[in-house]
Length: 118
Image (cartoon, rainbow, N blue to C red; front, side, top):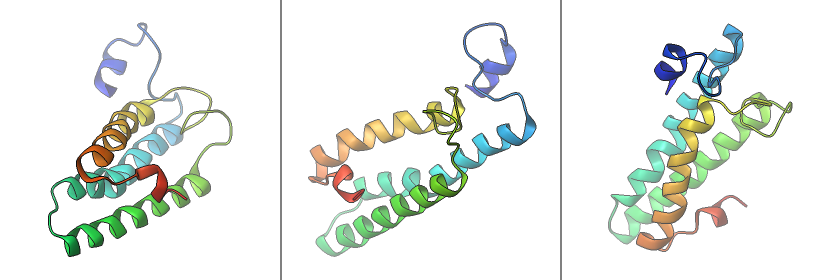
């Protein structure tokens, strides 16, 4: 998506902010997402056995808290999106994964992801 945004700058919305610091922030958010929810959410789907499921559920819950803390400290209060007023690569990166997990985890493992967010 980043390549397409750069390759065709006059088509559609710009997925990366103009300023280098803001672009770095989008990339950092994507990296933090991958290292937290991206890894533990899908790891939970591949886990079996009661003890391992409990352990992986705790890891997932901890990663949700880490991501929330990151967003509270480094998120932009300038708009409705993860990195400010404009839709960005951060949403392109996170939204499909969150949507998949919010559907797959309850159906395949009876885990309510939104319930972990309390």
